[in-house]
Length: 165
Image 1 (spheres, rainbow, N blue to C red):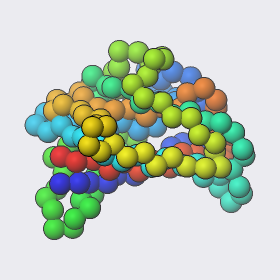
Image 2 (image 1 turned 135 degrees about the vertical axis):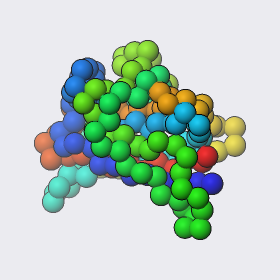
Image 3 (image 1 turned 60 degrees about the vertical axis):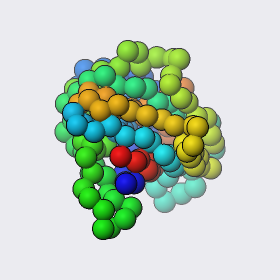
Image 4 (image 1 turned 180 degrees about the horizontal axis):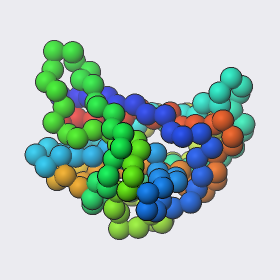
């Protein structure tokens, strides 16, 4: 079964590594559950700049594996692409924290990173031999972080994730 989850980051997201109760560059963590893992199948990433055109700037988003979920204060629930399907088994997409998730390192090298211009978008499929797999376990997940450049004022990321359970 396939599910979709969306999030919009905070505006003017900086590029300082997450720590303590401040998420800084972290804007999403798709968390597994104790009973279910998932395969991430599609990532669609863009930039919105309020009422004006985005400032032309190179941006990089990286993905790191999480090993402990942290303390999420806001979680977006995945929606089934087939409205007749069951509710998702995974925890959901955490988008705000009082304590950020645990990873081996918030610094490069990352599991994956994409660089694109803020006036474009990225639509990345992970199918067949290209799979992003997260094993079941309450602390397991994939976190999305802004790296390299701080986003301009009023600019935010839009992220849509499609996963399969």
